Length: 191
Image 1: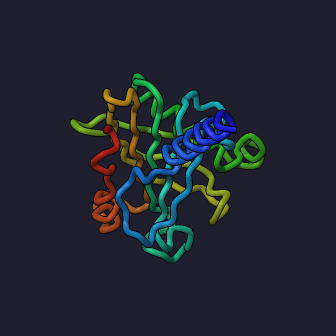
Image 2: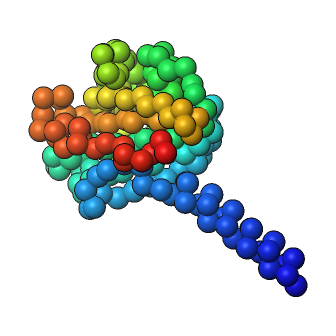
Image 3: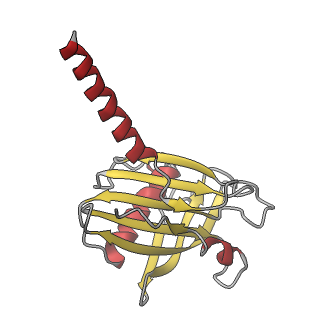
């Protein structure tokens, strides 16, 4: 009986520990933001070759066409191991991600006028900045251009890489970017 109790305790501890890592809050956002967590490989983007998880956060109004926050949101990828990041890698990852999200395997072809996601990023001193153009199957059923920033954070203590993405169709000088730029990683994500 004692061995059964010890095994049960170890099992519960392992499950709770694994669940905590997958569902921990990595991003600092307003408490009104909605959160979703996806484990890699992400169901709609199976070709992205990472292990870990994504935490996505959405402000009120992100899915409403007339909202100033429409399609403005952030997510972080918590990737196991250190990975080599550059413009090409990020462009490819974002193309795979948005093609999967927008179901481009089914919808993306020249015959119906819908092309696959196109991404262009430029490295700045501290991050990557650019645009992506994709078909918005979720809300407008039209082509949408999103401005995007990406920050890379390496956590040598945990042997993980964190990629913080921020998106909005609004130009980088729009006030929504003031709000998006306040979204940061929690202080203790590397410890």
